[in-house]
Structures are given as C-alpha cells and as structure tokens.
Image (cartoon, rainbow, N blue to C red):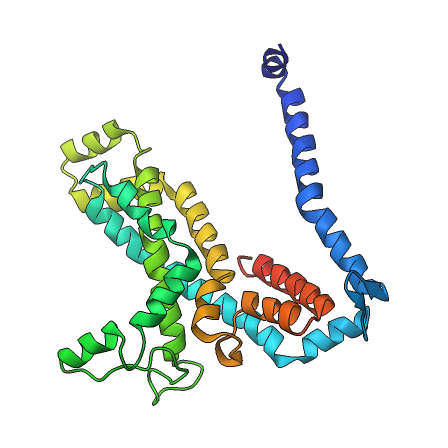
Length: 289
C-alpha cells in the first residue's frame, strides 16, 4: 500500500528519499565528525589528558612536515595509480569485450579474495633484492637487479620532483596487480549494459570493432566509468597495507593512512591523528574540484 501511494505521488517519494538521505549523512558523517572535533577542543579525552588542545593541536599538525607530506604523497600516488590502472584496464577490456567468456569475471576477482596484507607480504618477497624472483629474472636476461624496496631514484639524472623512487614503483605495481583485474571485470559489466542492437547496427554500417568500442560503447558507459574511476582513486588514496608491510614507519614513503596509524598507535597522539584525518578528508574533496 505504501509503495503504491508513493508511486502515485512523486513529490512524496522525493521527500522521503531526502529525509532518509539526511539521516544517512547525519549518522555516518556529521556525528563522528562532531565527536572528533569536540574531543580535540576538550582538555581531556578518552585516553587521558593531552598536553595541547584546540588551535595548538592544529598548529602542531601543520608544523610537522611529515603530516602534509604524507597527504601530498597519497594524493600524487592516487592520481597516478588510478589513471594508469584505468587506462590499462580499458585497453584490456577492449581486447576482452568481444570474447564474451563467462569465466572471465570470476578470474578477475581472484586477487581480491586475498587479504591485502598477504598480497603485500607476497610481493615484498618477490621484490627482495637478494633472493626475490623479480631480480633473479632480471639478472637472467642480462639486466641489473633493481632496489625495489629502497628510496633510490629510478632516474638519477632527472630532477628529484620528476624522478620516482623504486619504493613508489613497487607499491604501484603491487596495487596494480591487486586491483587491475577488478577494474577490467567492472568495466566489462558496464559495457554489457549497452544494448546489443546498437552494436549490431554500427557493425552493419561498416564500423570496425575499435570504432564501435571507443566511439559507441565507451561513451554510452561513461557514467559507470566515472564512478569506477573515483572509487579506484579513493581506494588508492587510503592505501595502507602495502606501504606498511613494505616500509613500516619510513617517513620518505609514508602515506596518509600510515601516518595517521603511526600517530595514533605508536605516538598515542590521538588528537593530532584526528586533525590529520580531517585535513586528509578536506584534501580529497578539494582534489576532484
């Protein structure tokens, strides 16, 4: 009865959706943020008293170069990682689009079945300088072994800002291995929603497979692709397991999530970690704009 009444009154259905959305935002965003802000402003907290409070905490967080550097490092990594993975996944999806194999999607989800920390430890063993299979293969084909788990620059002749280090490359490769199959599978699902008669009509008009894919299938699927890209961007931004398993608290490669964890768990500076979380949230909202 309720459903039929809402279907006859679109305005009532819209108001109901707005109310439910407001409750959702208050419960999941406003309430935790309010608790965090009030805990910073108070003289005491759930873990005892703090030496600083209020604006002093914010000033201390902003003065520490490791904090803002970790946020910037995470934003840079998320931008490069999400863009590179998205481009490569589109190319792979182009190759697999006409395959129409039902077994592809389960295979694409295999890396996601592994715990992230297990994936990180597996790739840490693969990247080991002395006994890692990756360097053994490089040596076998006549190349020099690479210091994957170090902060040595890949291109020493370039400017420091332009040359990535091997630590960043190793994290990027591990993250790509874990999430690239998921992107390909999700894109194939989005492409499957394109009406088949559109593709058949374009083919009858003489369009090649490449033209059909890039000029027809991708534009019709762009809303799903945009959402998928931003999901991947946000997930890359909060990368923690790989960075922590590879380098621990090494400040030269410390990402935002690892810095927050380090401040809260090792330094017991819960207020500063809350402030850093707020800065990270603001940064991630300002970046797409």
